[in-house]
Image 1: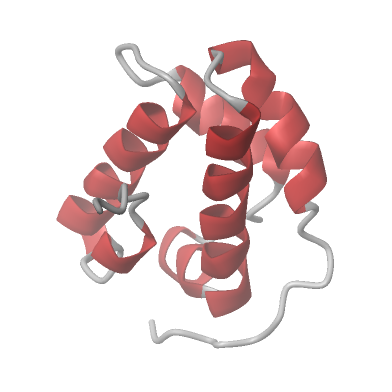
Image 2 (image 1 turned 180 degrees about the vertical axis):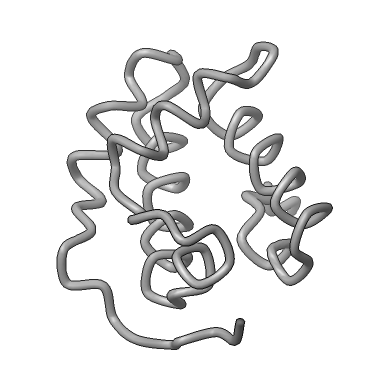
Length: 99
């Protein structure tokens, strides 16, 4: 089960950003989560580990299972679960840059 490292031409980050509106947050936050999700899609890691197609719809369903929070908090909760289950997902967490 290795990382495939291919570009997922079918992952629509804009569709994900729109789907994340359900969870509130700012437009910038939703775009940041969508960019991280696109990076994860491009890596091929999730599909290789979970044997599930990585789509914007799938991501929204997974984030809906989070206990609460804005899109970034929900994303980080899910990525944390993936890190625990498979390892190698910490790089996909959304982090805030501090000045």
